[in-house]
Image (tube, rainbow, N blue to C red; front, side, top):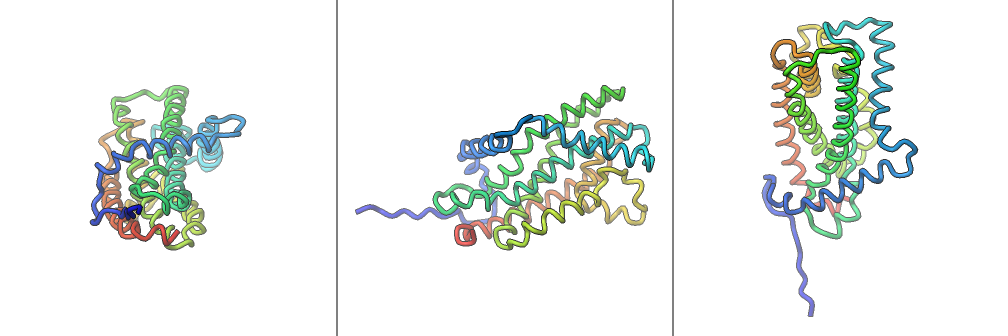
Length: 271
């Protein structure tokens, strides 16, 4: 007689990093699978990674740099726009992938046990390679416009990791909510569009009235974009808004993981 073994998720709301590490090969396989699927049967392949931020840079530079003449202090507007487009392209794709990750892999959630938190991590990790390629493009544009490279550029990898962390903090919330409320998949595209204009992607923070900036900084992308551009310009110290964004991201990640762990035990039934 065969013995029936029921595998259940561990109790508690903490992240078991050891368990996630044990399933690292699954994480790697899922990331590699998604990357291959993304560029399969495409004519220019990874070229799409460069095309999106370049197209955004050209469009924003034309309208905001030439027509509206948006001031960006000492930084050429094209560099300003591309830096915002690179961060935004990664962030928007990452949270969208993370939000849909549980739905995408629901066929294996009900069959085998593995730490479900791996799935939103996969959603955020898939775009990290694209993000790195876009950063290389940004370096080329910096040299093209003759921007002097400062020592603050050495902090760019750390700020980029912060961008990935914030994306995970938002994505883990959306993935859990999307498993319960299917409305999220319809709201998310609209939310992403609003978030673009509510963030200093194409305009500097200085255009926001000072009395509203305290509330504006509650958007974690504000500090990230300011910190990212600080790495490129090297002007002054790293903005305080960057640390505000990190603090908000930590709170979001704690709340998101806590909520995700509560939903995790019923995922097979929900999906």
